[in-house]
Image 1 (cartoon, rainbow, N blue to C red):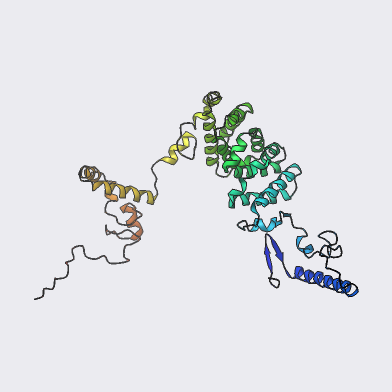
Image 2 (cartoon, one colour):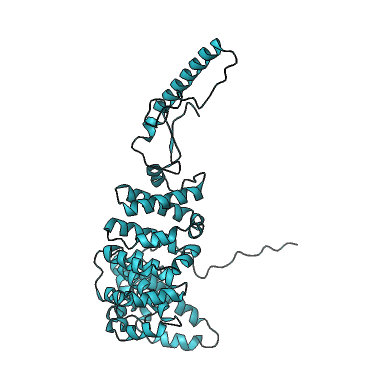
Length: 387
């Protein structure tokens, strides 16, 4: 290992480091030789100031060049960890603790390092979800909830991205649902409207904990009215805005289930013409009703046609009603376009002929001409009789 070169989140070992290690060892050996030459009973003191001078920038430190300009948290090079987030650090729980402490520190005094530390913390929770289990007991979540109320856009961005990961952890979600966090979430939403999908996802996860305190906060902070306003808008710059709307609707429906304030929230929602566009929809996109029909109508994709034809053919095989289904299908000129085709795309016969130039009525354009099918009425070979 001494002669190798390594660069990972927990070790930067290169030629410059190797040279400095040699120099420190050689100096220590020389000092020890001189000391023992004058006093044979002298023992080597590894903590001697001459070996450990000053700070990491001192020439006596082998890591001086490696750590210069690097952000190190919990013994991990944050830049390298972000580049390789699947790296299994030696002490993941300690790393999580020190990362959230660093995040809270930077949220109060935002700097360029906040984005880097936020990314590292999110990647740690995403790749090693269990590292978040300890955070509620350590008391960091009330501090985090308070920091979410900051007006700084950079702080709000970090708060939303981290909250999205914390809300997916059952322990953290339970802890957050017991503290005043809705106002901070709404502040972050307003400061970072392009992250509405992430904010709404976190809110949905929290509201599903069915904690009465959160529903009451939704009512007292004006979050319900704000979310209705969001649903009314176009959500410019939001990635996957239909999914964001779905998350918001889910959160509001969960709030309506609260035994104490659920009825009041339902009254507010039912007075809104915007809510009428979403409350009765069952699909995941939660688009306005005018757009739902256009999307959920009969699919024109070839794959969908193939599935439909296959289902109808299977229905025709039923011993009780198969004949009746076949009669209905055979009376349809549309069915005549599909029933005899064999390929998976199930294009109408007119389109098949236009693509292939010929129409055999047996194979589609993907398979036609590629092989000669065996005769349909081939005779089995004669049985040899002995004796």
